[in-house]
Length: 221
Image (cartoon, rainbow, N blue to C red; front, side, top):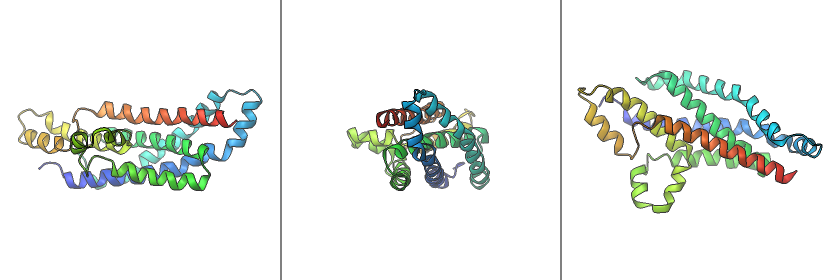
């Protein structure tokens, strides 16, 4: 096989766990330590939307820095043949998603509780990546429970990584590995042409948690 599928699956798991845990831990302090400040500003007439959006935008450079630093370690170790830019963008999307989770947890729980729940959630998301059990088996046998996999950011990360690597070989119609790549990759129930959709899903999950964060802050004010 042209692709080291075992290491890709394993690295996808640790990618979700490492970046997810670090992102959640950092995000907890963005809003969690300033609930009293938000309450004071909100009752004084300040825009709650502007406050949440502004605080979220300030974290973007840190998300980007985390993605680039992680790419500097991940890419030389795995040596993917696909374009490293798309990998780094995916790493940023992971950060964007888990930061949103950290924001939400920080305003509904104490910092220590939010940290424990956040790291546990990223571990659970990594487990629900569609690798073991395979997403195809989950979709076929677990009925409504598949929703837990569909809200796991790790599932979209793994699908995007596999799709990026597979597409390099699928772009060569007469290549020797086209059929084997298709067979091995789709065995897990992942689409090979869904990178853009996976990125949109990750961003969408991040936006939903940010919206819930705003709602929780306003309801507590």
